[in-house]
Amino acid sequence: MQNLAGRYDPHFRQRKTVNEILGCDSLDLPVILMDHRPTELQEVSRTAVNVQFSGHTHNGQMFPINLITQSIYELSWGYKKIRNTHFFVTRGLRLWGPPVKTAGKSEIMLVEILFNKVESDE
Image 1 (cartoon, rainbow, N blue to C red):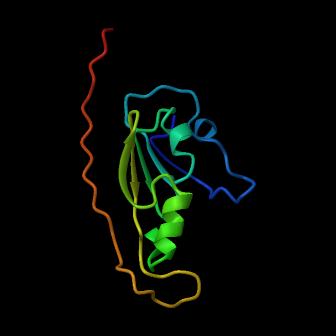
Image 2: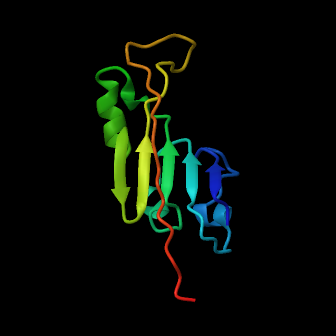
């Protein structure tokens, strides 16, 4: 099982499912997934992934585009916990499309993750 994994954006044909990426081995370490767009959150929450980081949405960066991204993505920006998976989505930099800056604020998310070791009964 991978402890840090990433996968292609959904429009790439080579994109694998989370389970294909993670494999089937069991480890005691947390699993962190980097996924460009915050898609398939419900499916990911049913896997061994503890934390997923995503971007791409830019949270619209300009009104009214943020309303569109909020309607497309279950989580367009910020934090959400689904089952035992923590999802973080950042707007990223205020660059989009052509190399011009938008009116949105640049954002770098700083996340501190603490994992508790669970003792096994073995």
